[in-house]
Image (cartoon, rainbow, N blue to C red; front, side, top):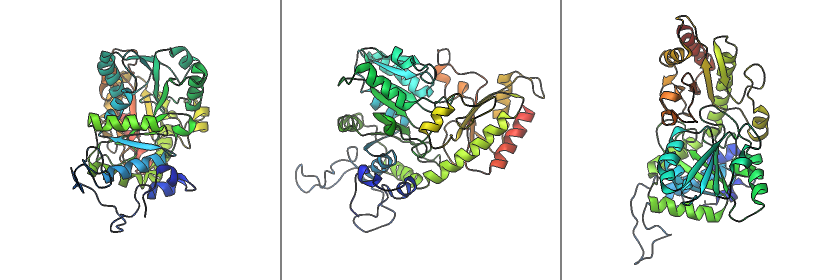
Length: 408
C-alpha cells in the first residue's frame, strides 16, 4: 500500500477506522500487517550526498516516526505531524515560535512543566508570558493580547482544574483583534486531556494542536513522547527544522508504542469517559465533597460551568476528574489532610503522576505535578485531588474511592 498524507487518509473515513489504520498500513517492502520498527541510527546512501528516499540520518528522518506523525495528523483532521521526545520537548519547540521581545498569552491553568518552561527558560530569553482566565470572562483574551503577542496558548480541558475554553471563540477573537494581519498571534491548543477522540482543535480554528502522547494517545504508561500537528506548511517546516536542530526526537520504539496505542484509542477513551462520569456522579452526591470538576456533569450543584462549550466542541466529557474534599470526616481532619489521606488510602487507584493510561491514577497536584506553580498566581489548592480514571470496572473504582473517603 502506498503511503498517504494525513489529508488523504481523512477523506471519507470515520475516526474509528482511522484509529485502526492510519500509519499502520501494511509494510511497503514485505506486506507485513504489523509494520517493522526501524531501529537504526543511519542509512546506506546510493552515492555521496544521495540518500535513498531522503533517508540520511535517523535524527532527521525515520520511517517509524513518519508513520506516527502521519497517523496523529490524520486523527486530528489533517495536516502535518511533528513528533518530539516528550510533551515538554514539543512545548519547547512550539515556544520557539515566539521570538525574543514578544509575549505569549497563556491560560491561567496549565501543566506545571509548561509554566516552568515559559517562566524559567523562555522569559530569560526575552519572551514574556501573560496569564489570563480564558474560560471565564469572554473579553479576557482580547484584553490580554497586545502588539507584542505572538502566541495564544491554552489547554482545554485544563490541568488540573478541568476548565473548558471555547477554541472557536478564541480563534475569532484573534482574527478580529488583528484584522487579518499576517503576523497575528498563532493559536496553540494543548489537546492532551481530551485527545482527538473527543476534540479536534484544528477544526475550531487552532493553528497548532499538540499532545503529551505519553498520555491518552499511547495509553499504557510505557513510553514518553510528544507530538504537534498543524495545517500551516510554513509552521510545519519551522517545527520540523526545530525538531531536527534541537534534537529532541523520539526513538523508533517509542513511536511504535504510541502507534500501537492509537489503534484502540477510540475504545479506551469511550471507557475512560464512561467511568469518569460514574466517578464524578458518585463524588457529586456525597456531602463530604466540597467541589467536583468534570466536564461531563451537566446539572446539579457541581455542574460544569462551561458545559455548553463542552457540548459544542467535544464529543464526550473527559476521563479526568478533580475534586476537593470537605474538612471533617471520621477523624476530624482538615480538607488538605483528608485529601492526602485519601490519595494514600486507595487500593485500585495508584498514587502516581501522569494520566491517560488504562489504569486509574490519583495524585495531589499541589505537591506533585504542579509543585512548580506554588506561590504564584497559578497556584492550585492544597486539598485538590486529581483522578485519571482508567478502564477498570466502574463499580470497583467507585468502591475504592468510597472506602478511601470514608477512612480519610
